[in-house]
Length: 106
Image (cartoon, rainbow, N blue to C red; front, top):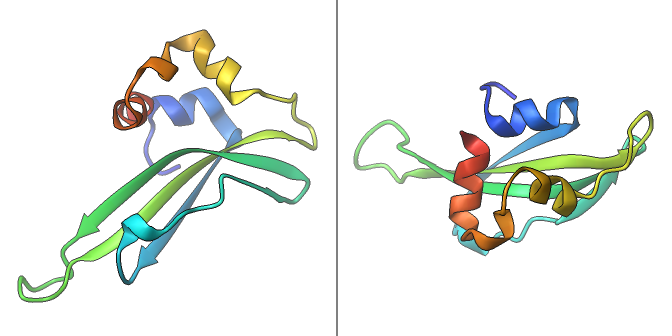
């Protein structure tokens, strides 16, 4: 990751950020919750919409979707249960989704 956050510190090299530029309603995009690549299994932990102006005020704003995934098992990794790991550091289940994401970005 480009910036240091609690999530990047906590997950270390297990984190995988995927960015998508969108044309249309980003809210309608339903990312995969889990995927496998290069012998590792990843689970979605956070989704963030970034709205950026595209230069001139009269031009349409550009939306980007940032997805944060955590490797939960795979080569050279101890298997993780994301739910158990998050519960060990805070009561994330009790938080509203946006508040939980904000906490991970601290």
